[in-house]
Image (cartoon, rainbow, N blue to C red; front, top):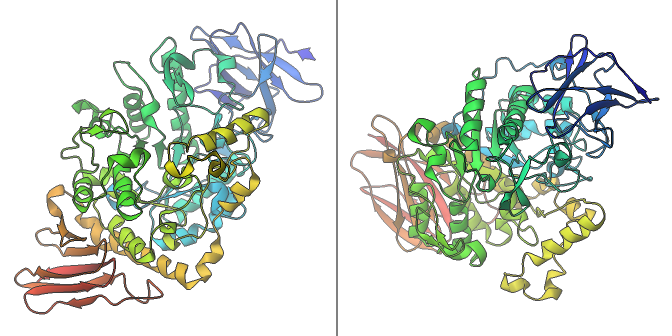
Length: 627
């Protein structure tokens, strides 16, 4: 192996390998290393020393390197590892990194103006590996017409950062800048985003900054400062956001966020489990991240949405008001109230929720339920009052990857409740002022589960299987070890295969009629309801009778909507009608279009009353105009 003494040195503007005029510029942060060499794979391989800057970053320009070159970094003349900012790992997370030119892709989305505001958005979460039979970026492109026709506005991809093995949810990612090679190439992902924009769909990406997976995580080889034992998370030592060298660690993750937005034209990021980003700095990492993204990307709106169980209002307030400036937050409380109410879940975190109609109303009115009350599950006060924060900045759902996949058998909500109740839940989700999120397949009541799957090697795989089954001990139904042994093995490829959507479901009337309902609800929300989702004062919700909800949107000079949802049981309602009000039926869930076995909802709009007779759970949407 030969050493190359003649290297032109320059300072790249970012981490990783980038094409420069004279070759490839390399940059890697390794503050405790004495030397870093670029190892270009070949026969024979060559080592090219990089120059260390005062901030601990090694830089260099290698004229012999090209786009497509495979490389690793050798540390202190010893072992060589993949680039922590690798743009592609064609042989997997343990293999060499590959030089990629992000500027060679020809984008055709110049007319794209970015994500609609959350007020106008309907999010659709999907897992690339199980959404299609092929499980690739290219195969997903073929399904974009379906998604555009469904009426969603924004695709939210579960994490695509490369992970170990053949399949994974994505939350064990270790190559944070590299799209998973099992899904396709970097340009395949660019084609997907480009095609989505052409179809009128925005695309957000789920990113994980609170931890890295254990298999293939080489960050600590480069620096002991990426993680800190001063803080602990469910996954071990926390990311170092407030200790020695934390400025460089913070910059690594911020640069990653900008990389996805700038190099792949993503319209926003969903930040996973931000409650695990432990930071005692004067300026929280999330505030810095949000400010850097919003101030750097000025040609289009980019949204940053957090997943956070703490219900902290300041997260979505501007920084000048003492907040962190995020654009939105996932709100679990709505989901938990719905599941407690309709499916009866009452253990673990569900014990904090009554599922009563009044508590469901309170959750919808506020954006979340816990505003400082004591949580039995968390063992203390939880949440703050969201006050006048626009309700559209809260993301609501009745299914998502966690709330389905973290069940022992990956059952969806509609696997546990009757179809009529599920239609009522769908109508409520798409009628509230909060931003709705659908999880792939829920729109047709998919027959398939979404289970937890991994493909870790050796002892780690065994420990994952064991840990997966042990985590359900607190649930009474799984207290028996023999019962827990029936929980699907995440390491078994069949668990991954079972989690693929079965698109032939849509050939069945049961599933296609549910799809028609979601299609009608999304169309109504986008065309009719979204313009009214402006202020809290324009929306009212209350309990109606013993088991129903009444929602109303009303603005001066605009068409208004009255929505009645029979949540439980059968009930007849006699509701006052406003004077000189003309009512038009927009949607009724017990229609032959939406269910194969309809039970007629009797509706009378004559005189000064609205008379509705529900024979089972369902929904009626009325459009109101002044006559």
